[in-house]
Length: 415
Image (cartoon, rainbow, N blue to C red; front, side):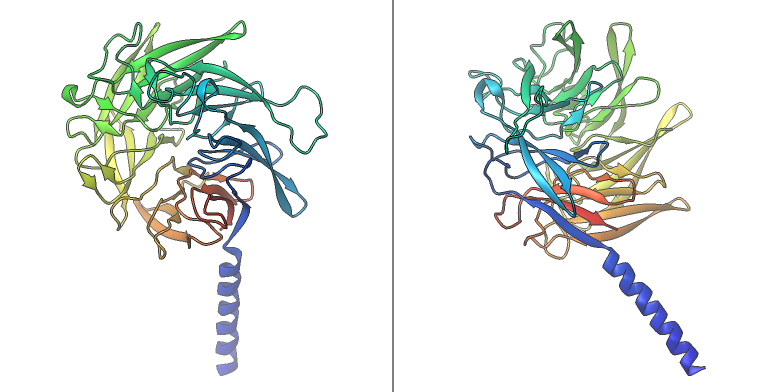
């Protein structure tokens, strides 16, 4: 009997050790601050071949940021700088991911640049990157950049671009909007906007879908995250501030002929602090979001929330509240096919360098699991990133600091 119990104990220990061994974080690249870039502030995009694409806020040849590609090579990865921003008319400091359009090229935004005399350094751009038209055999093969939009009366696009099947681009700007031609409802004084860029005969047409009006109108202001489509063509998003308590709102924009009508679905007062990311849609009736924790009234515990359509209204639920003030999730949550949510926090964890977490639904409740605590050493620190998942369940993202040169990392996490 004792031998039998010992065998069971050893088997359980081996299973536990195997499980712990399987949960590993691998650094795919450590940024140096040179042509490869420095301090990524957004997540990654994966192509059909499993290659990764991303942006860095700094680094590059003029320290105005870069776009990079990480290509699988045997058991390792090789980074290729696709484009280094020059600042000025070219754009500077990308804060969002690059995403693929229907034509297979990359679209993204820079928070600054585009002009030389507006917004104290430029109001930002939307750009397109295409690979060279012929095969490149050199060590460095930069892609070809085209500026889609240089912003003037809109300012500071920080969000990921959303692209529909027709190739139209949608996004938000943190500021601007009140001087927008045809903007309609204006803003007091400049609270940000939702925009659309439509391609036509080789050029692009900018339309302001909605200009936020701010706290004095109980409307939102300063959207940081982008917009998300539902199944019927409505756009959903959240603002960082504004609303009746200046904690932000969750909104819907519904197309109405050539116009878009805003509906405020939730005043985030006092349920959740200042959302900083796009919403994640489950494909049915629920949106998931997060409040980073740094509100206009000081730091608050970050939260994860859901908003579910029920009957003719919406039900707001706080899924999880973190146990630190500030430093919560800064980017959109990842939803897998089993209904689990994954994300990162900018701080917290055993080394206060952020964590990778998982929230699992069970019988109407959610179970929080801390998957990994960043140390601030070679693995990086402060992951201001959304996560992506490959076909076998590995997670990929970036850290905005840490690593050997303290300029951030790209990582792969195996659950």
